[in-house]
Length: 50
Image 1 (spheres, rainbow, N blue to C red):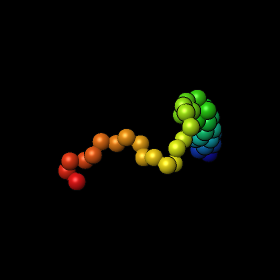
Image 2: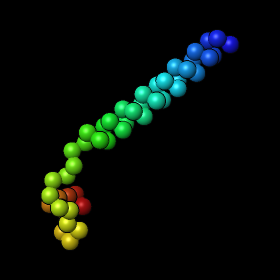
Image 3: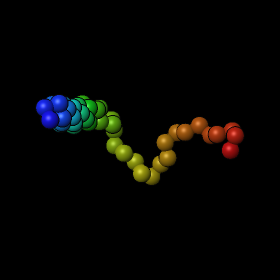
Image 4: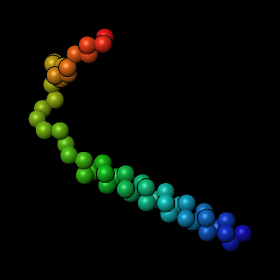
């Protein structure tokens, strides 16, 4: 039973660590510069195979 308890604690610790890492990555992600325009499409090269 002790091994199962230790494994469960390790799994919970890893889950909490992954959640904290995800929040940190979201907060540190740079915000897009400039206003977002929904009137224009971004410049995307045409696909010659289409």
